[in-house]
View 1 (cartoon, rainbow, N blue to C red):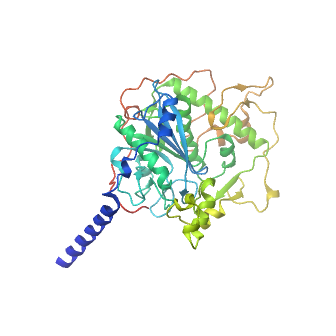
View 2: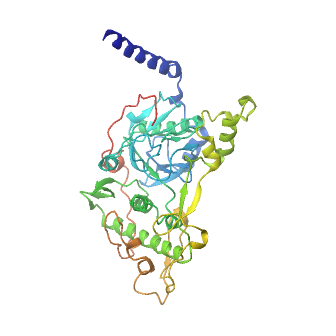
View 3: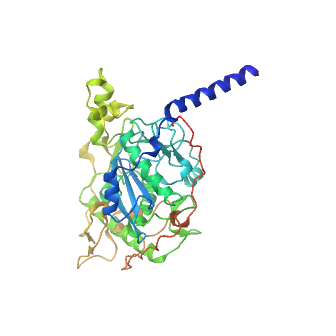
Amino acid sequence: MLKRLMLVAGITIALGACNADRTVSSNRHLQPIPPETVALMKRNGVSPGDPIMMRIFKKEAELEIWKEGPDGRYAHLKTYPICRWSGQLGPKKREGDRQAPEGFYTVTPDLMNPNSAYYLSFNLGYPNRFDREHGRTGQHLMVHGSCTSAGCFAMTDETVAEIYAIAREAFAGGQRGFQVQSLPFRMTPENLAQKRYDEHIAFWRNLKEGHDHFKVTQRPPQVEVCNGRYSFNTQGCAPSDERVAQAVAERRSRDEARIAQLIERGKPAVRLVYQDGWSHPSFQNQAVAFASATDPSRLSSRARRLGEVSRPDAIAAGPQTIRVGSDGQPLSSPASVARAPAAAPAAARTAEAGDAGVTSVAREDAAPARPLHQRLFGNLFSRDSLSGETQAEPGAAEPPAPPQRGARMLNGAQPLTPHGDARYTSFR
């Protein structure tokens, strides 16, 4: 027994010494926000102490930071390339699957880790309530430095230092928790049309609801979990503001009309398959060169700054695009892709502008009474298969102005996640 206690004590001391050697003499977690980013905030009418939120897009390998302005609305501040994420598009379900999580998470000050094994990091708070209700397991899912991932989002040391500093100053300004929206891809009609037969499409459509709430209100949505799915801007699972709910329904209707239009015009359904995640294109050459170099000293300074790089072969290979049929299975040949059945002219024309949203819809004079997406595909787009909720009729409701800034907690909501231990040294 004594021998065992001595062994445990030795391990504890060794871990502590390792952390001490790497962090006690370092003030990396106190690095200031770069002057050019502070100047950008000033030009946008915000300050370092104002609240933030983040959005992550796996397919595009980008992390965005948004800042709250004086009117309570959030404006885009900056987009950072992600050096490495692992796994495939889709949610994390179990420990060890190498999946980077997808969902809506809240990062609180105690989830910030200045003593990270990967320079600096913060814990996303996985599993949250939604994950736990679905029996999902795993821990220590992070945004951190370096360029290696086993379920995390690796940003490089230089980039994570800036992101960490921005978050630190928001907490110092009084924010109690910031929302991270981790999404599989930018929620455009084009992406959703391509992924319409993916096994995760119902989950992704649920995530798009939260994405749309943010686009309509320009504020991080309140998040509940109702009947096993995310519910946004609700109280007790009922809409907290009918005007917001109506505006979101109108946006969804426009997007679904656009999706149906794309499918009618022959947009193929595809599945992206990765060897093990990917990297932002701006890092790919440097990451592969760094990992394969026999003499790292001869590499460019940018490549050397990447630190550890995981699976450079997967980065070099990129995703494989596989065309699939309505059952989600690969087609035997490109010629076997089935086009949508012939139908009357489209019921709606959109001025869709990607993720920036739709600002107008022009309807044809001879538009049929039933929307195109319902005529072509029945309930595939008119009902959410997770909730069975029917599509609302479009109206002319104006998005309400958000309330002025008050409490720093996300819309007064409590975090969905328990407070994790930020003193870990390993990542899963």
